[in-house]
Structure formats: structure tokens, C-alpha cells
Image 1 (spheres, helix red, strand yellow):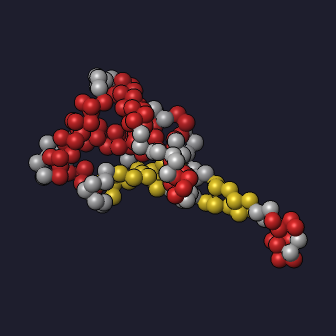
Image 2 (spheres, rainbow, N blue to C red):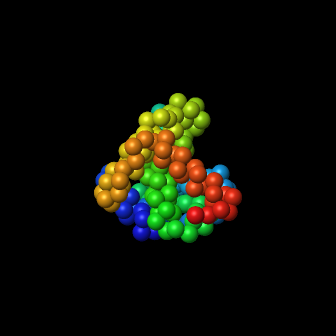
Image 3 (cartoon, one colour):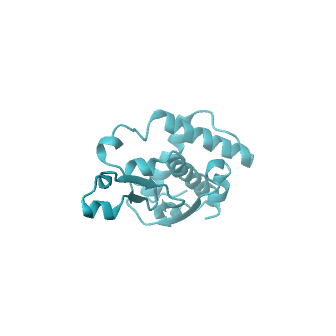
Length: 169
């Protein structure tokens, strides 16, 4: 997806990571998601463990941070006939998912629930950061910036509602 390259210009931290994006069939309530393989590495002395030595008690579990990610966008968005309009909505979703990658939310989600519930992922600051990055991207493209986050949210909801009702602009 070529639109991902434009969006990545706002995310300099992610330049070393491999990120692919594509459309995928999913429920109408979901606009997109990110997926990656998170590896858990367990380091211990196997011989000491089997022989019952005291070194066997030192078992270290570490999470290896992934370098490859896949972002999937809801296939229903392809019904939007105006490509420029579809591009803006898809790029907004891509910014949302790339921010999850940058904040390493996938690693937090893969842990057990007690650790995960302490880290709230979708908070007001997260939505504000999406809005700021989206405006930054629009500025780089030479498009007028949007004044308030609420205006952007209302516009996207209105277009998505028309897609769900098959009244596509």
C-alpha cells in the first residue's frame, strides 16, 4: 500500500521496522488492526536443572521485540469511490495503528491481564496524538489542517456511516 509510505514520514522512530499494510475482510465495527509475532525467550541452564543444582533456579524470561508488523484495514473501506477521500480515512487508521507500534502496545497486550489492565491504551492523550500526527501529515502534503479533533471524528463517522448504509460518496 503506497499510502503507508506517506504516513511513515510522520513516524521517524519506525524507519528500521518492516511494516506491511493491506485490506482484509473483518467485522463492520472494526476499522483496522496490527499484528506481529512476539517471541518469548527463556534462558536457563538445562543441565543444572536436570541434575538438580542450585543454578537451575535462575530462569530468565525475556520478550524479543518484533521488527516486522502487518497492518490490516477493513475491506469495506474500498467501497468508497472517491480515492482521495478513501486515502484520508485509511491514512488516519494507519496513523492509529502505527502509534500502537511506536508505543509498543502489542508487547503489553501479549502479557497477562493483570499487567495489561494497568496500562490503558486508548486514552485521551492517545487520540490527541493521532490528531496531531494526522495534521502534521496534512501539513507535509500541503493540505489545510483541521482545527479540532471533534471535527475530524465527526467527519470520519459520517463517511463511515454512509459506507455501512451503502450510500457511498
